[in-house]
Amino acid sequence: MESRLTTVLDKLLLLSSLMAADLDRFERDSGLTTARTHLLWVLGLSGPSTQQTLAAALDVTPRNVTGLVDGLVTSGHVTREPHPSDRRAILVTPTAQGRRAIEDLRSSHADVARQLFGDVPGARLDTFESTLDETIATFRRLMEESP
Image (cartoon, rainbow, N blue to C red; front, side, top):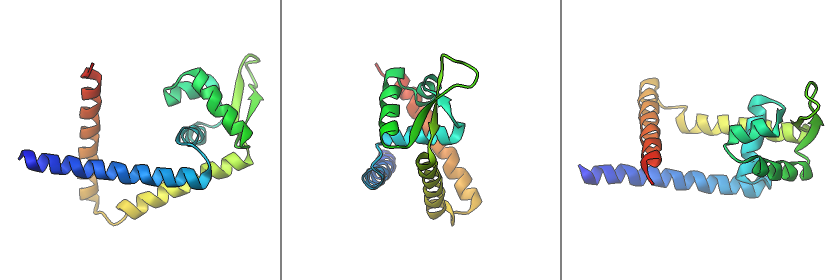
């Protein structure tokens, strides 16, 4: 039984490595780091946001978000705009280039999902998703318990 468990873990680690390699390729092709891509993804989901809101969504410090936003301003993906109702706040807003990048991310994400899972029967996909949910929850718990 232990051998089978480690074989499954080895396959999960291989999948993780393949996904990391694909992410590295995306970074090279797009010129965006993983962290900047993640920030754009969050903006795509939430729309223009304050840096404080982005920091919370990304689970990073406000200082870290400032650096990410600075880089995305420099690359032309976002602007900082005055908040319409809070004069102390600034909204990070995607530019046309940023909106194109967000749409490309969404399209690529959906395309990979279709390629990986489009032919998997619904019942098998339900079981796979449930197993992943349980595995993620267990791993999170183990990480929290670890010193």
